[in-house]
Image (cartoon, rainbow, N blue to C red; front, side, top):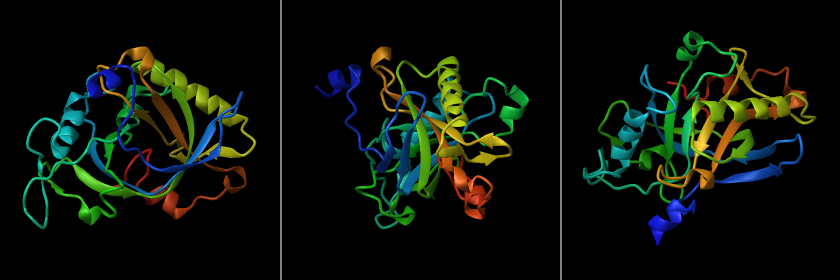
Length: 234
């Protein structure tokens, strides 16, 4: 029943908590305020992207124990500890924007993240230590995100189309404007389903970090230096 449900797009995994600040309407994006969350994160390899990111996904999957014995160690028991899969898988800057060249995109911080189940882990210290040095555990602060939900498999063209549509809505949004880093919006993609889910039944989000328009001229130190959904700091 679980596998068949996944094939038809059912999402049963634990998801990050957020408050719905505004629902989507014509020309106006949905706004969510996410609570702080703990994530396992790994950087993309230089030559990987939307359609060939098996290495990054595999590292995180091995960390939680999807394939076999978890590649982690509990600090108390010194034993590997299985961690439940959550949704969504988060991809930060996985593909160039339509107006961005490949060289500029390659210089941006590109990461894949698994959220850790908040029902189990209340702090970074509670999460088992990864055995792979390319996997790190971080806590992301609360952030406000503009969201566009779409279906189908995650390909570069589909992601870029939905990102540009969301940014176009934000250009005329009366309340919110994107948070910028190096003059570019912070954005990421969230995929909620297994690879074998029927494409037209998959649920995905593209998310852009936003702030209220009356704060547009403010550059907070915490915004520029803290780990974020749209990219983590080292």
